[in-house]
Length: 84
Image (cartoon, rainbow, N blue to C red; front, side, top):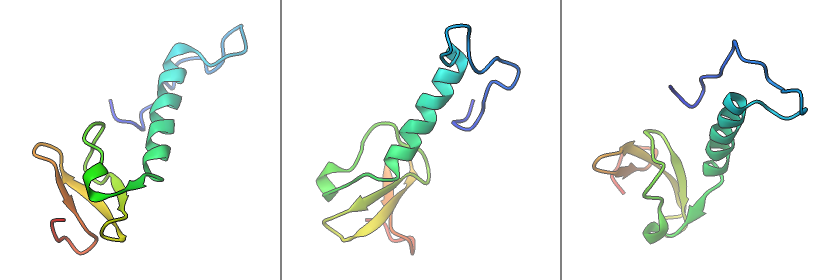
């Protein structure tokens, strides 16, 4: 299942007026993705968990965004493809 899959055949809201469990899981994944687009810090503080290819992080040491190009081993690259 990808982060963008959603339970199309599942009711969105239950009788309690809250999202059903499958939808709650989808919303949690989407929320995590949105938050990662706002992450920044030093090179030493780059994320080490919850990584996927294309994940962005603004590196304040380098003063530019970097992206995950490989998860295992973790490789970060800048926009022109240089390993950083």
